[in-house]
Length: 226
Image (cartoon, rainbow, N blue to C red; front, side, top):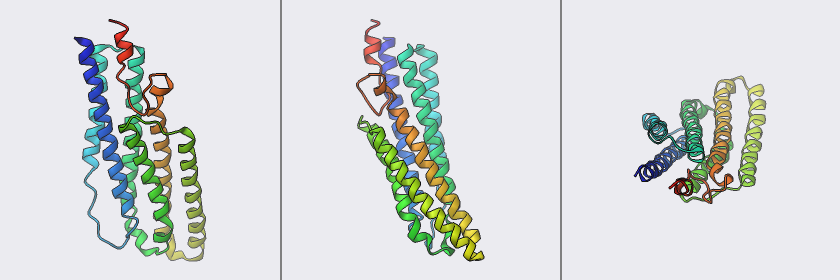
């Protein structure tokens, strides 16, 4: 029964990874939501510890499967893909937390409320699309991801160009401007990590498993051994 037990563990890993992704997507939504109303009081985020636990659970699950079942090459590839995806999710979570740290100073820069929402919402939607695709076993075309990432980069550079001029024209805009600069760069970084996350979750399909945007169970490979 080792085969069945390993498959059960791989299914559990898939659930763990999705829970981690959903938690990160919600964290990004909460983080960028603060950018829509910079004057309202919002308590400090409390999702950091939960995301750390999700990350640890994925890592521990991968280690457990490796030690107990010594998976064959194709299944080991699934585990390394899961670890790669978990690493990207961890970075996205950290960046979302950093955005919240830079939000308060932006209230003294009124134009920020006009410049940020489109960029923030595009990035948040990007994360949700990738996580949702994983949960439903769909593939996000690489061209679509590249186009979205390019749109985010173009919008970000537009904001930075405007910000540079504003800071040169008014010294009072320098301090909040630096916070805005940090937020924009963090949003860009989230888009970059999300692109790599999507790539990691599509590795299984690239290897011809017939199942995309998820960590495959390896049923066919295991069945061939018994």
